[in-house]
Image (cartoon, rainbow, N blue to C red; front, side, top):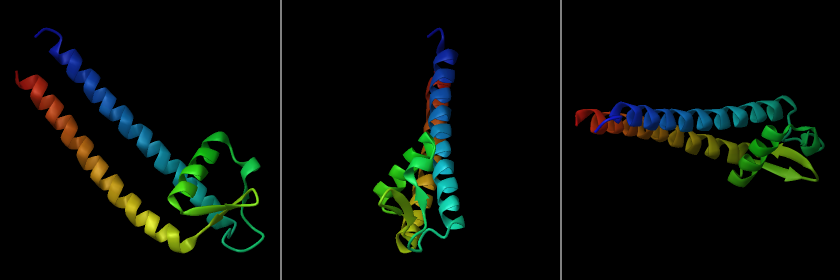
Length: 116
């Protein structure tokens, strides 16, 4: 099969780009949680205004809000410390299993295409 190496490279690059995208999302969420902690946003009357966030930060805030780690009240995002602990444990498991899955997929792709 001619071009087998090209197909292998394309598939491995696709796996790598997926991993990079996921890592950027996790980093964006981590930065937003750090900003919320700086402001002690669990306290009433504090938090980050939704209007003051950039587009990527708003996406991260929506993602964290859907996961239950933060809450939006009156246009401000606030931390939920108890839910954040549970979220972090789940996210760590997801990250580790995703990394191992991506590694396994990359090895399987390389072995399958290069073995022939």
